[in-house]
Image 1 (cartoon, rainbow, N blue to C red):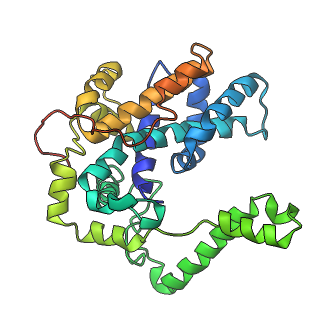
Image 2 (tube, rainbow, N blue to C red):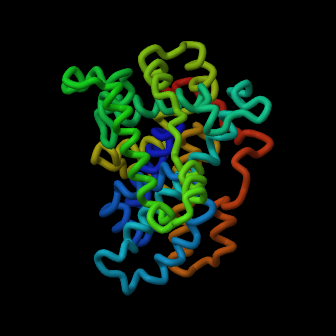
Length: 321
């Protein structure tokens, strides 16, 4: 799926902020700490508008009586990651269309068309800036290689063939989770469901390798610097980075940083959205707001592409240092 790295990093940073926040309850902090990998899976899952409220409501109702193995904690972690996915979409999808209009012309830009150039470069920049070019989990130094060439074991296998094999195994695993595989007796119906639910691999990963190893100066200027995508000095970003390093910057007030980020870099605005979505989910979980208010504050059911891009303050062009 396109924007995989950007979705993951927005979730990771929002979790870092949430774990430091008095506005987030201990139940959320427990789930986000104990089930971090599951929250990351939620961050790269589509269609969150359709299911997250129901799952959040169920987690609230079952929380007090939960027990090991009933997956209440795991589902709640997944939902919280999903909220951060939506924050990234709300912030960046309008920008992709405005900065790379040719990709979206005549109804293009769907999954079958692959990611836009700007979304690929966003992934590359956060991979460098936040994940240290793969030195920070959950990625590796070989993540944006052409053929995993920087991995010490790459020379021992045929990487292309191994990739084809693993893709087939992954598709089989996903299909194995579908009830129709075992329960549908009519072959024609089974076959239709099989092809309808088969997950295609439509993202050309070589594009990411090319963008990482041979970044276009023109695209860097248009999509990152001029667009003010990432500014390390924005307080909300600086706070997230300090937490990532294990030394939270106590001189940065979280609430003030969240407020200021509304007119700062695009990435700071995405963190603001994600954090506020988690705060709204928290208030719903604690019974302080109703479902309608939760949906409104979480932008649920709203289009990803408003008529105009969010305004940003004009700041020094130091987006990716």
